[in-house]
Structures are given as C-alpha cells and as structure tokens.
Length: 343
Image (cartoon, rainbow, N blue to C red):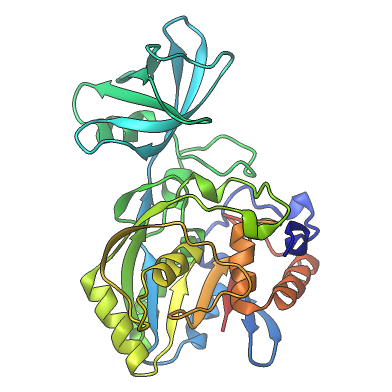
C-alpha cells in the first residue's frame, strides 16, 4: 500500500480560504456504499438521511489560540506554536518555534503584552519546551494574546471571524490545535432538527493535535506512525453507543477524529469503553470498523491519513471517484470547504 495510491488532482482554486457566509450553506456529497451511488445535495438536507433511533457522536474539543507572536530577549522576532501541555501543575508546553535563529535553553521570550516565556532544556526535534509566565490566569491571557492556528493551506492570517468560525458551535473542552472540521457546518438549528427526527446526540472529546497538519513522509503507508492525541469518552456516551449497537441502531460519527476515538476505545467484545486515553490509531484500508456505521466528514488533502481513513470506510476507488466528481462539480475543499456523508 503506497502513498501515491491516495493521490488526486486538485486545483488550488478549490481550496477554501474563508468559510461560506453561513455554516449551513455548505454542499453535501452523499456516498452510499451498498449500491455505490454518489449524489450531490445541500448540507441543509442532511436530516433527510437520518432515521429515528440513529445516534450521532460528535467531538466537543475546542481550538485554543495556540499561535503566539513576539520577540526574543535579543530583539529578534519569534513565532511560538503551542502543541501540548507537559505539566499539570504549571504552564510548560511542547512548542514549535519559528525565528531567524533557533532559541537556546535559557532564552527569554516576550509574547504580546502579558505573556513571557523561558526556553527549557529538553525536547526532541522539532519541538522546544517552553515555560510560560503571566500575571493572572494563563488561559485568559492566551485568549487575549494568541491567534487561532489556521491550517497551512489557508494562505492568510487569522482574523477576528476565525475565532468563531474555526470553532464548532458545540465546542466545550479546551485543548485542540485544529478544529474537527466536519462539525463546522452544524448549527443549533441542525442539532435541533436531528433531535426532532428522533436522533440521539452524544459528545466525546479528542484534542486534535499537530499531526493532522503533518504530511506522510514514507512511501510505504504501513510504515507511518500517528501522533498520540488525548481523548475522553463520557460514561453516558459509552452507554448510549453500546445500547444503540445492541438494538441494531446506526451510529453516525461526526468527523474522522470522532471515528478514531470510537474505534480506539472499543473493547474485545465490541463495546465502547468510557474513560480517558490517548490514541495513535492509524486507520487505513483493511481496517475493520467495530462501532461506526455512517461517517460525516469534510474533503481531505491528497496523500493524507484522513483520506486513508475515509478510504478504509468506503473503499479507496469509490472514495477517489467521489473526489473526482467533487472536483468536476467545483466543491470547496479542506477545513472551510464542503461536506461528505458516507452511508
């Protein structure tokens, strides 16, 4: 299984640089695995594809404003990207940095008005360990000083609107550095409509990490290793999913991150385990899904692990055929792009 097996041609003009005016304005491409039908419709019609008793699991992670701009004590400019908290009793983080010269341990940083940092020893490349200090609450200071970390294929700086539009309306748990993008189309109206159709909706949390941006650097896909991402499955969600499976009802996963959390936390008897964990599950063609019956997802980058997951769920050739149709019909791609439902 080779990396080129997951490639497709995509005009750069189809990479969405801004969200549509309204969340629900997205287009929806529906794939039916049983008869291999591909159908174009609107996201506002999503509810028509649900049945009473279906269960939707969503990821309630919240993107933190992880990008800080400032200067080193020498006066040189530096950009700091918070990736992962290292200590529970302080603000020590694994970070990526960008500057003319890489900061050495002991280097002091001033990041905006209220935040300072010290580069610590340790940290495997390309990461630096940094201890942050501020007067008052660090989370509040980060909200004021930090920028939302838009993906690299969005070739502009984040603006004020991204603080809202690059978050789902159900985001609750701080910790992600990228949004679970399939959820960006949902509004409270969408959720209320689904509930009105008899659909159960339950959350879990998987904090999307930097690995979602990183390219696969091996030709043999089986040699790739995923980054760990922390997750939490609430007791109520586990019970609801297990009850739905026992009763033969469908489980819809909202996004690839939700899918990975569900399929990682399933036990040997096919039951979802409640609790906290860390997932490095790599899903590629040949994977046997235990819990997820239907998937809502955005369109993903060529040669990406996300495209591999979707290809495992719906058959690689079928997915690539759908992607070629989406290109012909000028769907919008990636984080701020349009949406796909696989049944």
